[in-house]
Image (cartoon, rainbow, N blue to C red; front, side, top):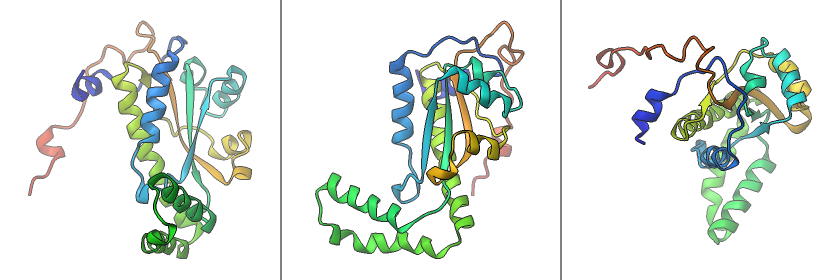
Length: 208
């Protein structure tokens, strides 16, 4: 299936039918997220994969009672690092040195570039980190569509309440966006049979 076909098929599913996603499909989506680009390759976030029904019920209550949360097979919670620390950077470069089998010293100039981010405020770095989660989210949406798995990106939840529920502050994280993954309930989802509406390409794209 071409990526155009996959993206034409997908939509922001409003009703899911509770069917479980085969584990191999879920792993393909998670692997795609793991391969998603991020600034400097730092991946300044974690992604929670939640399938526990009792926990999903609690999240639904703080996500405007949107039924996709509990009718999904799994819920992904993207959570950015609340701070960028020297330890984060040190760990990253040790990882590079190990994976690429190079001397840590040979990476010093690149490391100094990333360390310049430490001059920014924690608030600014949180914004920067949070932006990276949306790149990962976009990759997840495409990967899910290619596997004919439905998804719905959501910001309509109480971030403070979710952070407390998942104890994200203690983990140095802050929730940014959530993504239910599952299968559409075509009979009860009013959007399922509607045509996709997008701007005309000559309005969307400006060629110079």
